[in-house]
Every structure is written in C-alpha cells, then in structure tokens.
Length: 226
Image 1 (cartoon, rainbow, N blue to C red):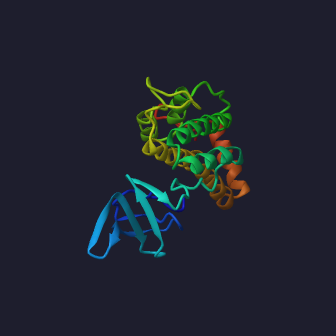
Image 2: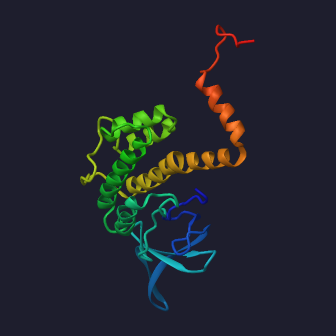
Image 3: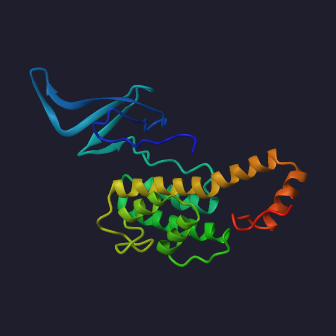
C-alpha cells in the first residue's frame, strides 16, 4: 500500500487526520462550560485540532463523535470490487457498531480467501485451513497469528457474519488492516512482480527459462550434462 493509516486515538499526539487522512500531529484540549468566573470542565469531553488542516474533532468517553466520518482505513487500491460494498459498509458503521463492522469484515475475509485460493486451483474449506494453506504458500505467519488474536482462526474462531459480543473497535480496526495486508501480499505484490518480469525479460529469455524449468532443478547428486 502506498500510505500507512494510523487511526485516531484518544490523547494520541499523531494519527491520520479524520478529515484528510494525512498523518500529522494533533493538539488536545478539554471542554469547558459556564460563565466567566464560574467555569467547569465537561467530564470525558475533549476536542482535538489537526495541525495539518486546523479542523477539529470532538471526543466523548474515549470515542470520536464528530466528524462522524469513519476512521477506519480506506480499502486497498487493489481490493476487488466484489468486496467493496461490505468493506465500506463496515467502515460506515464502525463508529456506531464496531461489533457489526467486525462481523461484516469476517465475511469480507471469507470471500477474499475463497477467491485467492482459486489461483492455486484449491477449493476453500474454512478460514482456518485457508489461512494455513496460504501461509505455506508465502503469506507471513504473523498474519495468521494476528487473525488468531482477533478470533478469526484457531480454537476460539468466530463464525463469519456472526456478532461476537466481545468485539470492540480495536478488533474491527485490526481486521480492516489485516484484510488490506492480505490483498497487498496476495494480489498487489504478485501482479507487480509479474509486470516487472514481463517488462524486463525478452521472449527468447522467457523461452530459455521455461526450458530450464521444464528440466527440473539440479541437485548436488544430479550433475549437469556436459
């Protein structure tokens, strides 16, 4: 992905602007009410000014309430169209229903894995086995471990599409990030490598490589022919 997204977080000194998604510094202040000489602090109410655009976000009890725009990461630029509606709906409801957002994202992940496995001529079984297979094919193991933490794989996995009462905003935000990382690893990077290969390797070189590969890889007890 071209840009890294840092979601807004209470009291954080730097995060991605909720208005323009620019990663920048933030300035925090408490909220006050009353008249001169009799001013009281509003409990658990804060406002935060973005040092990039000078626009303000308002927070209550640890959550950003204005702007009401989602502070979830934007979909990866290579996200397939068939995932966009569910992904963006999850973004839209994150502020008001993080549990609902997480349930939608598990569905997004399930659909994504089914489609990715087609390029390996493999039929999807379940998220757990699908992830294990992709790890064997080069998906970083840390992604599997991260999905285990948010109860997508492993013994405590939550069924895709079902509400988990223990889900919260952090769970949903982790799922947003992991889905984009999987797209980067399994869709974007292979396409970039294929593009570089096609641009730099001539037809004659390609034929030579294919002939070499068709003969198999030489080993120490399998000497090359003179």
